[in-house]
Image (cartoon, rainbow, N blue to C red; front, side, top):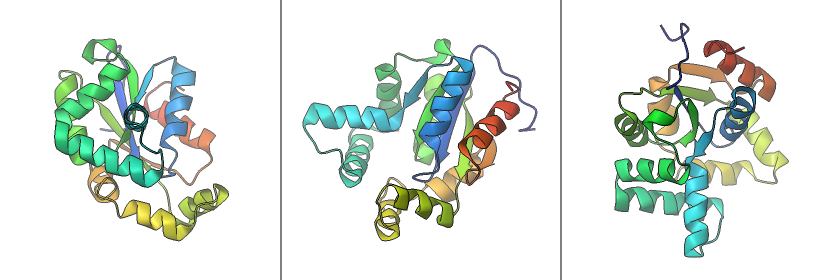
Length: 187
């Protein structure tokens, strides 16, 4: 059962959710509280954008991520992100932030085999997401456009159903973190 989780030295926790759900905040909090390193798909894409001299706008990064997956395939995309972070199956426990596709989750599980990453999905309501966007000066219309990009289409429907733990991300960040720590048996 998902609520009966025992951590061991090889644990890998993957985090998924819509834009502004709090994925990075949770990854940083888990890393701080556990001492575990963390890897980030968005940081991997941002580093590649910098290497290529591309702008770091949301749209540009989404397009680059889609292009990288198309050119590399999911397995090489996942391996590249893990390599950038110097992490692999024998390096657990660690955290992977920013899973956006069913194919990415499948590839992550294949690459890390025999370690089976557990997926935490942060479910944020439209109202809370729009509040967070507005606090950053982003309109709800622009945020909705982000979610229509191919990199976002599988997040809610596909990944939420595959999650080992769903957390209500409308809660304050410390409550989200405590929910994850409790589930991992690390509170």
